Image (cartoon, rainbow, N blue to C red; front, side, top):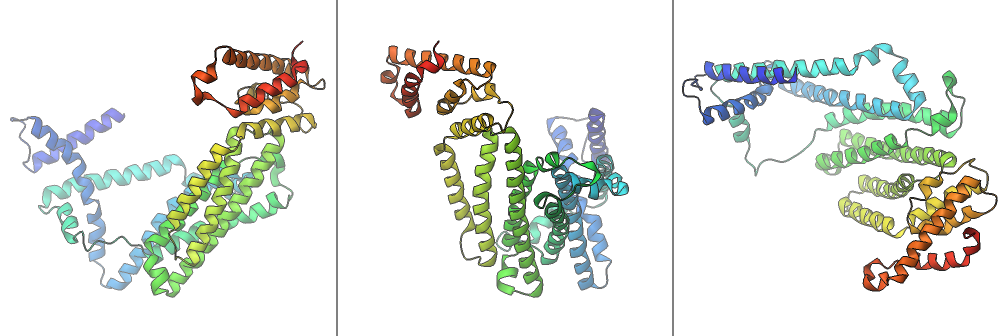
Length: 423
């Protein structure tokens, strides 16, 4: 089917070229073939023609322009709201049950197949129209678009009404989600439909982190495109936009808190991994960036991208300086030895770097399960043999770049605790 679809599109392109007398099948050559390929994409330029015709029929230009701005805002808001609902439904079971399953019609309306049919059907209709228009019209829409404005007169800007419709639509969904968070997650309320609280609380943090990044990007895009209107004109619509941005910033902060809380509940049951520690560190620095974004919305008198660059550099340096593997081993072993966790993933701990060895030695105690203790002792023996090999062949002297302070400390630690693992 995909191959047939491409073949049909190619043949339509050939047919319309023949109708325009721009292709000679008798003298077909490479140039003609390339012209046919180019003609496949040409109708895209004419997609705007039907909408231009509709706008020219309106007698009241001001009313038509306002209506067009509203429709544009709605057109942008609908897919944004659908995407937001899907992400939040994946992150929160109660939100999923109350917002999606509650309305089967809404769920079927935004079914992937229906959306796919609408998009493909609209594109196909506009594509065929663009081909026919190019046959009966000699003027190139592309030329008109290019010559309409020179590069010096062109300036990227946004529409306050369009952005306000988008922000209000998104914030309505977020407000419903926040109400569910405060009712069930933060206050520990009784969950409906027999949902398990631990399962409810321990999922969705990655979706929420992703949405928080998207929110910050939306705030920056809005302040960039509406900068003149919000911070210079300062009319009532611009003030409303500014308040919506502040509210979205607060909502994003609650998303970060929810992500942190969900992650802490998950770690309380399963311990640390590198990915989970990275999420914690990222949440801390994203919170700093969010505070800077809130100040930027209110004041707008500093270079926010320079602040983001500084925060990003600090985040990167932190990742290089923090002994992540030691933190992971300490957390997981503390949980195991204290009885908070019934078992420990010793196979995962043994894949960590040499930084984790001082904590892994603690698993040689007599109160540790025999299989875990045996794996730990075998691991310590292997590490000790590796260190002896390095010393025997003067590995450090020949390769000073491989010197590692943790390894030097581990050698002394292994020698001190030799009686625990050598028997």
